[in-house]
Structures are given as structure tokens and as C-alpha cells.
Length: 101
Ligand code: FES
Image (cartoon, protein in one colour):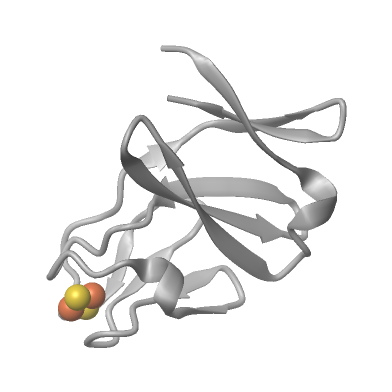
């Protein structure tokens, strides 16, 4: 396990997400009112990038078939997504978002 500084917090507004790539893995950073969360950016249903989708509150919505995931836990919330997303721990250090990978 190591930590990687990925982005200034001020570049990710509350209620938005973005993709970062670390070690050739696409990771979705989601900023909510209560912090920054990170999941795999790849939908477990058909391997589409979730960063092409949208956010409804704390729910990540897949652009391909409408699968939904909890941004905080990665849990699959709506069919056809049934397998949850891998999640990553995050922190904010000196105004920078840090990921544990
Ligand atoms: S690819 Fe995401 S729900 Fe099918």
C-alpha cells in the first residue's frame, strides 16, 4: 500500500467527479459534502468508464445501462450492476487529494 497525491481539492467541486489514472488503473474521485471518495472508474457490468456517466447525490450512474453504485461504499444499487466497485481510501493533505493504492 502506498499513497499518491492526485489532484488539488479545489479542482474538484462538491457534487462532481473526475477520473484519475494511477498505476494504469482508472479511478473515479467523487467529492460529496462530507468528503472525497474513490472507486474504480470501470463499471462491473460491462467495463464502461463511469466517469462518462453522472452523479445523483451520492450515487454514481453508469452511462451504458443505468447501473448505479454508492460512491461511499462502491455497493451496487441498481440492476444490471450487481457486483460492487473496488474502493480506495482517500485523505486531503495540504489541500491535495491523496489516494491509498
Ligand atoms: S456497463 Fe454499466 S450498467 Fe452496464
